Length: 382
Ligand SMILES: *Cc1c(COP(=O)(O)O)cnc(C)c1O
Image (cartoon, rainbow, N blue to C red; front, side, top):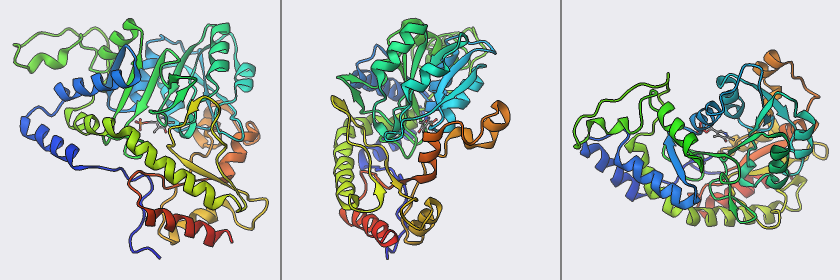
């Protein structure tokens, strides 16, 4: 048994970001400033997008992307039910209604066939989520979007490194929204980024993210002299701080090193679990790059005498942190109460919801940690 609890999704923080945060604190410029600008530039270069705007979360990135579309109260936005609540809540906060779609059983990604069934004359946008870092079927999604004149906002919270047929995730739709929350592939504590190639969208997001004040209002206390700003929208307080960007500018250059380590752990898990009554992740689709954000096992509850929740408890007893990604949104009370969804509506997502378990997959894990996870899984599912 381990001495310490293996925390699920614990971030890998190294000395350069610690020094940079201290430098930020000593500089006196804690809020949005030069380090945010540097992080935006690095991210823009990394993704090859024309504009990259740092915000305080991916939720904010989704919300502001949706707000640029000027949605009305009976407009609909298609989102997978197999996602984190932020994907759907951002739609609600933009004034429109989320319309849920089922996932593919083997990838947990949004099922384009079900998107087609849910498109109506009110549909304005689709938010595909690249689940666990595996790209969605973007050719099919973009072709539906083109056919019905829908905007595509990619939820890339799991998918910073993801590529689809040579294109980086987030550059295929009109917007890509990224998260640097503590459990994500690179972190800034809390933090997010939106990328787009559209100048008008980028301008609007920049303004809405900082109180609706005219562009570059953050510079008003700088050494170029005080500049008046004008408030042109009832905006939000969604800006990223330099303290956060200080972490990001050192994490981003290491992103591929971290991904390689997670891939190694992924391969080790696959090999260790292949003969157990569990379903290991589907092989990668051809001509794609997986970001290896979540390693999800599907517990074969029809074959073994243990439920997924019992499995979670047994892992925790063995001092291994686990996650569940996700209990589908339509199974949560809020969406049932507000939109009338119920169990039975999305069979594939329910099948996954009842079986899925995420195992630790951080670049911080050492080989002993990985072996402890494997031993615990095998011990429980003998
Ligand atoms: C983490 C996550 C978000 C929200 O990211 P924040 O930066 O915490 O706002 C949105 N969508 C998905 C799929 C996520 O996993």
